[in-house]
Picture 1: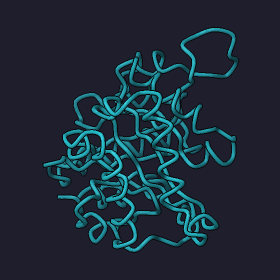
Picture 2: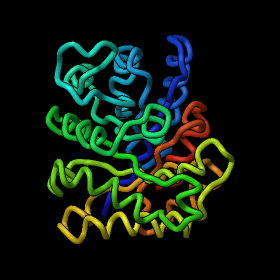
Picture 3: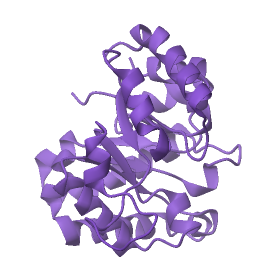
Length: 250
């Protein structure tokens, strides 16, 4: 049985004061989420602050991105090794905003995935299609391409300690949400893509839904066989909503 995981991606939001208040609010309600694993991914400048506040809460720390490089003349980059030093367990790689706003290629995302694994971080690999790609029937081809880039770089073994998040790009920040059936169809496709290479890894990997999951729709989504949790954006900035989503997975 796969343990549900609900991870909050705070994106470019927060201050010392708001981080403290948000984590206090989540920690105060964490006992309601049952066996669901809960993680938060603040901006990198707040990792140390958040890590200190999370001690003994059971809430896990993650980062929003990492460099594809170990060290060197790469101004502004933050390496996976640096992130690990601040006590992170997870790091998001290949988020749709990184792919589409900053032009990150499949190859770059695969290199970041490999860096995370080499530094004992669990990568949360984001895959997903745009509205045009979905309407043109390209959903599976796009996701297969994104997965295959990582498989070519890290092998199926790389997914032995990893998480995948399906992000329908058309459902992020638009108010649209994939129906539970639509989401399940893609999650099943992702798992089957890995199953072709390793049954055990495919059966054990957690696949999260990352398309505007809210307290109102979380329960229905999390009832689907291949949806193992959520990568939560806007709703993760409200403690009550975030905890309600996590509790829906119990």
